[in-house]
Image (cartoon, rainbow, N blue to C red; front, side):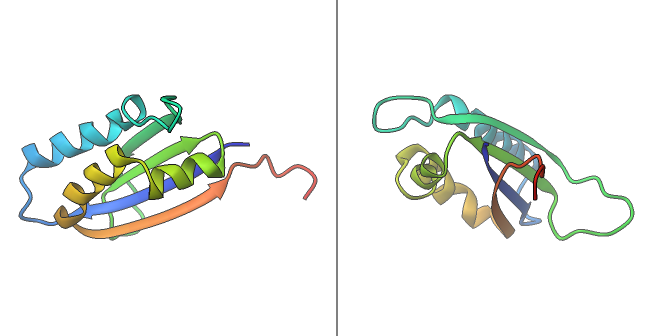
Length: 111
């Protein structure tokens, strides 16, 4: 099953809409830029959106799901990949909140 890397965040209020949009598009494009040591595109997919829960107020406003084939690919993304590291170094200072979670996809059969 796939490894799912969930990223939730909120931009600082002073970050312009144009700058936000540029970073959101750049995040979505990482799946076509990040390559492992064998020059393989290793991110299976990236899906993202704007938080839209009406029932409760949340602290974040953007949600991304980054899908990997293996935990090793996710660890490479997090700890080694220079494309991701460079992107993260530029976006993190613009954020007021970041929540990360990692899970292994499951169909929950046989638990």
